[in-house]
Length: 333
Ligand code: PBG
Image 1 (tube, protein in one colour):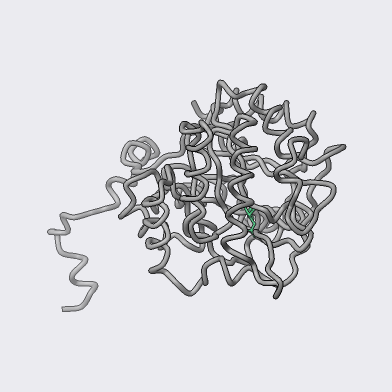
Image 2 (image 1 turned 180 degrees about the vertical axis):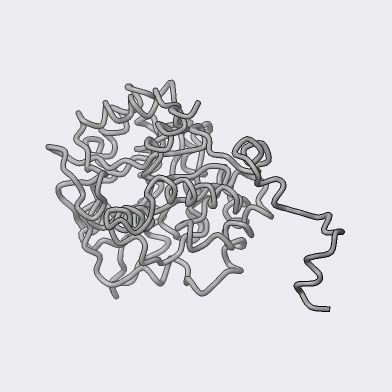
């Protein structure tokens, strides 16, 4: 029997297209939908005047002043939270600015907490790369290698600085072994039992962080392949997440998002705690660049990309599109 004959039979009773027939039907059967409360907006704050980031059109390095209006809008839109990154003026080998009470991230945290701390969850990036002159996520040993255990001591101090300034959720993004246990211990020993930990558990050494380097003014010497994961590896994603859960992570994250949806699905299948994903700078800029050329429909691509991240298993998504998606959702409701 030819295929043609088969499709002509009258007993084609199973027709998946029925549920795609009208906008109302499609909306009713949609398995996943975006909600503003599940979106977290990453924000860069620098000393001095605000300025644009050329490799991320539409994204700014904010000043301590301009960040106020952005977070006020984020809160009004109903976003779940903001993730703060500091862009310091001066850097050194140990990233002193990260623990300096007057350091830009610590000051920005105070400002944002006082502005919107009651309406959304204020989160801070806990990593040294924004603050070190060599651009690595930790301190270096005499041979120039990233020293895991010495770095943990710096992370402990950073955790106290960030929690002390009111950050509610510390984003541990440095990929040092034992970082969650070290930070949890330091927080608990200093009265910060209620400060939560978001572990960037499965974080890959990715080309998609490219624009972020400009965003935080980092010129990395070498690469991060001795601490971030190899893009070739799937299995260790879930392993890293479970190790972080054992050490006390309150939330685990996969990063980047779109090229790692398999890892995200693996982690979501085994994690007893919420699972988030980070749609990183390069994912943002790819969409912006293609849209600027008229090669893809911008709004559709944004919603499709973030929906696919939710579908793969993310409970919440960090995305530079957060406020824009929220505005679109508001318009639709
Ligand atoms: C580390 C950190 C990075 C990003 C978030 N936290 C850079 C890196 O690991 O190389 C990248 C975020 C992005 O690309 O949007 N502090």
